[in-house]
Image 1 (cartoon, rainbow, N blue to C red):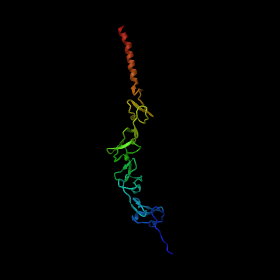
Image 2: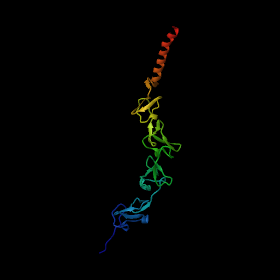
Image 3: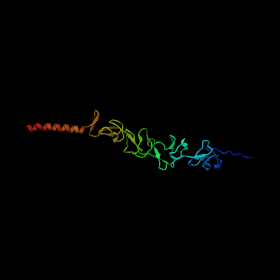
Length: 209
C-alpha cells in the first residue's frame, strides 16, 4: 500500500523539519516544538510555504512581521513603512536592538522621545521636554508640567510664580511670603518695616524733650 505524504505549511504541526513544505528559503524552515516555523531572522512568505529574510531596524517594511527581532527580544513595529522601535525607544548604533531614549539623547523624530502624550519632543535631533514642561530633578527621564500658584505640582522648580515652592500637592508661597491678589509678597518684610516705623515714631518725641 502506497502512503502519500503531504508537507505541512508554516504554523502547522510536524514531527521533523523535512515534514514542512519548502518552496523558498530552504533551511530557514524548521520543525520547532512540533510546529513548522521559520528560523530566527526569517519570516514566513505570504503562502506560508517558505521563509525569507527579515529586515533590520531602519529598513523598509510592510508589517511588523517583516522586521527582525531585536537581540533583547524587544518588540519592533513597522511605522510609516520603516522597521522601528516602539514609542519611547531608539535604535542602538548597530541597529540590532532598541534602548529607551532619555532626555538629552540623540533622536530622529519625536516618536523616539515619546513617554506620555505631548511631554517630550525631538528638537534639533535631541530629546527635550516640550514647551510648558520642565525636566524632573528626581527622575531624569520625566518631564513635569509647569505650574502657577495653587496648581498641582511634584517638585519646586515646576512652580513658575515668583517666590513659590511646591508644597505637595500644590504650588504655594515660600516661607515668609503670603499670597496677595496676584503674587507672593514678603510678609516678614512688611512686619519689619512697620516695626521700624513705629520705633522711629516713639523715639522722635523723646529728642524734643
